[in-house]
Image (cartoon, rainbow, N blue to C red):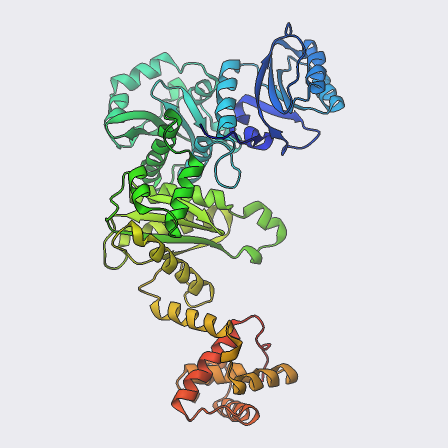
Amino acid sequence: MRPHVDSTLRQLVAAVGEPLVDVVESPAGLDVPVTGLAIVDPDDEPDQYSGQLVLVIGARGHDAVAIVRTLARGRAAAVAVKAGGAVDELRAAAAGAGVALLVVRPDVRWERLESLARDVLDSGGDTGEGGPGELFSLAQTVALLTHGIVSIEDTASRVLAYSRSDSDAAQVDELRRLSILGWQGPPGYLRMLREWGVFDRLRTGEEVVHVDEHVDLGIRRRLAVGIHAGQRQLGTIWVQEGATPFAERAADVLVGAARVAAGHLIRRRSRQAPDARWSRDLVAGLLDGRTNPGLVAGMFGLDEHGSALVVAFAVRDRGSLPAGDRATHELSLAELTDVVSVHAATYRRAALTASHDARVYAVLPDVPRDRAEPALLAMCAEVAAMTLRRTGVRVQAGIGSTVAGLADVAASRGEADRVLDAMASGAEDSTVAAFADLRAEVLLNQTLGLLQASPDLRDPAVALLVGYDRDHGTDLVGSVVAWLDAMGDVRVAAQRLTVHPNTLRYRVRRAVAVSGLRLDDPRARLMHHLQLLAVRSDKRGPPSSSG
């Protein structure tokens, strides 16, 4: 049995808040841990509820005020009640007693709230960087990618998770509202879905079913896809159209999301299957060579000796945004992991994802052994484009080489990391790049890193030139590097520096005079070039100046 991991009130509210409950008072903030859930009836004897969310049934409004105070003395983390017109009185009681108060909306069934809250608490907030339960996080990601309003249901049409729809509250139709509240949808509409064969189509495969809007029933347009494990249906993802039309690739997103959801639902059904944290640990171990590839292959149904490659994703430009914008727009690692997992599963059903050291990795099995195919490049570009549109931050993707089996995944991951490093250094300004495209830049970066890390390999002439620039506020280093990059073509180098060729000739002669550079010796010239590049890629290099 998996160890219990506490959730926080923030995670719980983020998942099941709207349209079930409203937070009206939280004296200690929303980051207080919630250790479990309890149900209290007015006739129950007072007890200790340390750290728990307590649902007060059988009493509402004024009659619940005293119970709120009693539960606070029992050290409850939060109390959920139906206000019955006494919101202010209940808020004052909760504030005075120092307990968080959640007001449950009048038409919410207690059993619905209990079921969803227990799901989130049982997950322990286990979605990477402390997000809410797995399925709620997935629903939110699908809503982001499709521009719709999402619910995930089991085969009995019970809602397991849903996306928040605060911004689209006016667009939520009666079917979604009643489904989440635990009431059955309009019988006539459900009968039509059966008559149209919608449920049959959802049971038989990965087809994305389009359901038209029905104004007379108050039902908006929908997309739906079945969640399957082999031939067995586990549930359905429904996406209702909101204030804006569906995204162009919404159907593709749903296929990938259904594959991700299948793993979540299988874990929910089987105590023997790995939980999400263990799954991510297995993938992370595969990426750095710690985990036996046979174990990973057996656990996820992969061919241990089949081809695979790794794509690494990293968020760029964090520091370029004002503080307020970063707080509003920055894409968290957990959110990026969710987006990558959905798109990667769309590209390859058995794709694995994990995050490590501020990067997100996708292990893609059964890929071509030559250059990165267009579909892979398009998948990576779509992840980057979506995050830029929604958050204002830039994501770059580095693609490693295809390897012959899972045992070599760590090597592909290393190449993907080095591609991202080369892109970060300015060698490549594109969104997506493959190792085969940047092999020279990657090898150069590694060489420069070795030089920077080895003081005994420093060139005395380069050290003298760097010291001269530092003492005199010049940039002779930049001029020499431009001349060397242009292979001695003064006109090309001068044009790049936007100076007159004679000015550049003077600077190069001056650099030789003050440092002793041997630019007429091919081997010395090569070593000078590498050492100077290492200096310029090091943050401790000379300041830029007119020289």
